[in-house]
Length: 110
Image (cartoon, rainbow, N blue to C red; front, side):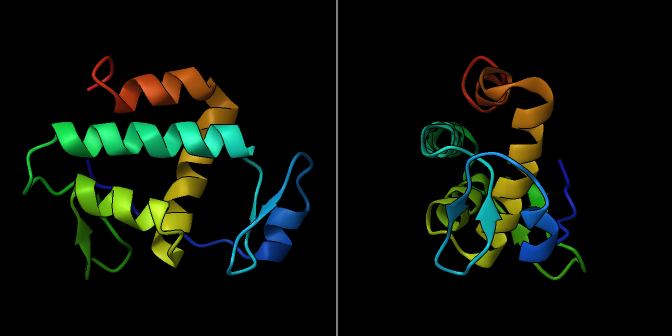
């Protein structure tokens, strides 16, 4: 799976309603704390199940590829790339529901 990540600004995110969690970088997340925890736990399980050298995400520009373990580390560490990945997953949560996204990342969905 290849995913291109586009970073949105805090101003773009500020127009949304709902619970907002302010990260250390000042970006706004619409995920609740519980949703974020469940997604991070699902990413951790996905990373443990995936082949160690499997490339799963290509960042925009093609200069960086992430394995499932690296994706988990980036999201869990709340890095800028991790925040961008989490925003993609957040969109999926809003469109399809948390359990659908979690099941795709865990044994049921892999």
